[in-house]
Length: 482
Image 1: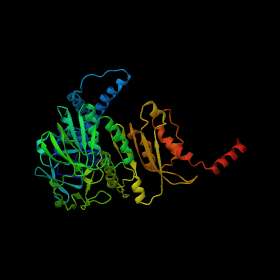
Image 2: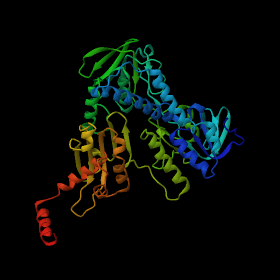
Image 3: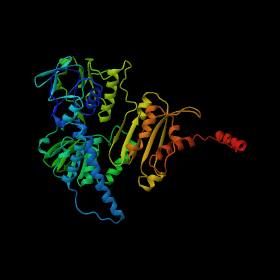
Image 4: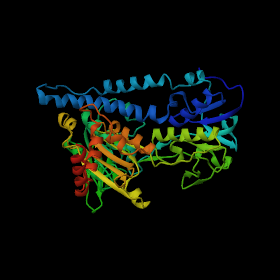
């Protein structure tokens, strides 16, 4: 069982036990700072990532990839028969969650020296919160309560078999026809996974394309692959209403409308912050436009209350929450404070192929007036892409402009390719540390690893700098020293 509270006071209170809350609370406990961690229930330890997000979705995507690989093996003479047993697929998802849950539960946190309080917290003063009528106070309070999926608010929604990321991983029966509302990362990942598992998937999206925050020249490559797998897309369209439990009326921007039939609806139209239960005003914490007002050190208008993760109203990624945690921990111990800066942030949409993005975008560079060169290369001549059949892949890099002897650095970039999230890791490292592109150019890659494509982009860039004058100089040098 979790540790009982003998004292209402501690050094730090952490509200929430997701990626951000755990990263802060566990480190503080390890160095001897007294920590009270408040979480609604034992099952909610691990937050959205473990329970309803990253972990179950990636496990389901893994299952779907195995199924798809089996189908593709038919090209080599192997015949696939039968249908996916969705209950076995979900049992696999749950099993992987339980592996991680062994180290993300109230009893384990108590063993690490954290006082765990189960229940819903609300502020009762500037440095105190109340849980089930009991008051807890601390020098610092960390808000890490995450976010919730935005619900679809249209007529007839109560009639349908409705899914979002909080219940899609608990389905007992695979929908024969799945309607996906929204073409962001969550919607697209689920659409492809369910399609591969056997659902006929249709996606309705208000915008003109998928993954609005990624480079559209790369998302178009992913879109084509998804369409080839059988997913149908309706862009510049929105649901007007559900006319029955299995039919929706869709209206396009040009005014025409049509009916879509389905067995289930998956909704991925963004996330919201649930702030009201926290009673923030009682702690002197300002809220504007349903977001907590914070400074660049993640402090609220009550400087003893800090935010970490989705509740910061920033980027809603688990690794962003961990990044916030590192900033908070630094500033709790050091007079040299760190400020929130997302210039080196990265993200991955775990479709097949994946889309991975990091650093500054082309628009951000233009808006800031930063001079840069854009390197754009497909994988058509990459030997690993040839052997593994992903010559369609493509990568884009933005680098600083430099002369012959000026250090050129990687400012940002994107890639669409199988395992793109892994392939760009060395580029993220170079971007974060401000390394010269020569760190990639001079690296010795075992042939034919997939990451050689990163070097190929740099090599091609340098080849373009071989001007006629430089060629003459090199010829002269060869005659002298060769």
